[in-house]
Image (cartoon, rainbow, N blue to C red; front, side, top):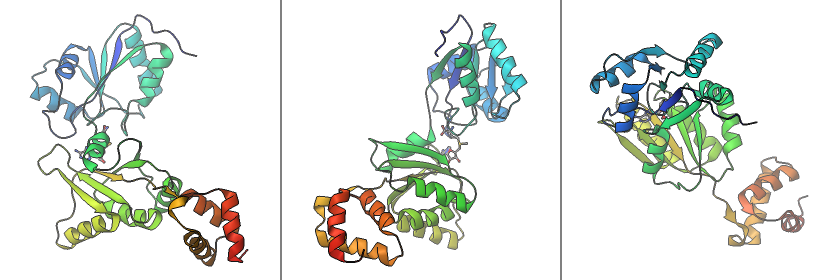
Amino acid sequence: MMRKEKDTGTLFICATPIGNLQDVSFRLIETLKSVDLIISEDTRTTKKLLSRYDIKNAKIESYHDNTTEKKVEEIIRNLEGGLDIAIVSESGMPLISDPGFKLARSCIEAGINLTVIPGPNAALSALVLSGLPVDNFLFIGFLPKTSVKIKRKLEELKTLPYTMIFYESPNRIEELLRVLKEVFGERDICLARELTKIYEECIRGRTSEVLRVIKERTQKGAKLKGEIVLVVSGFEVKKAEEFNEDTIKNELSALIKRGLTKKEAFKAIMARYEISRRDLYNISIKLNRF
Ligand code: SAM
């Protein structure tokens, strides 16, 4: 049940630059100047930002999502007592693969005023540069660490028709591209690197083309550095009408040869084409395989 907001202080969720310190708004500066306390994932980065904009005497404390319950309760009490608090992360929008979710939820539950100072975010910046469809997209953020779990997650995402956005470190990007190719097959992708910084670049192409570029660079000793967002096109649903019966027959027969059961083969075809189970069944009996 929604609780009514009370006359409390406000938690300002503040986006900060993802590389270029000029990417700040007047409102951000005003907010950081006026709040009673800034809580930050990385106080060193925050101090640099404050110093760049000549914000003096700000009170800064460290905040992580594994910050103790006691600390969260203390922040809530301060907000309830009327203090205004800004939360910032190391870069970009707090909560987005960064601390803040737990606190924002606690504020909502306690009826504390909450607002956002919008600004930079790596995912959206990469998406709009990617050249991939922006009408429907899915933010995935960081994938799990082990390859088994990565594959399992990618299998889950494989047939979703939305552009997908992943965060990844330069050390693991080559491996991710390899697994992506294995699970998703070829897709249109964009590797966006060092956004808003001097060496900003976007490597666009099919998965194997981008993988080749990365491998070539590694071989030349120019290992990929910096921060990376990978944008991947969604699964393309092809209309069954575009395909004649023979195509569907060939695909079915190939899946059966690969050892899939009839049920699994149907599921795979139906995920790929807009075809009814009845039509698929009728085609399959002509195959004489089942
Ligand atoms: N909260 C941030 C946001 O709003 O984008 C994301 C923080 S997350 C801990 C850090 C990841 O974001 C990096 O590993 C990278 O994937 C991505 N990232 C952050 N800054 C970036 C930049 N300048 N260029 C490309 N990717 C960036």
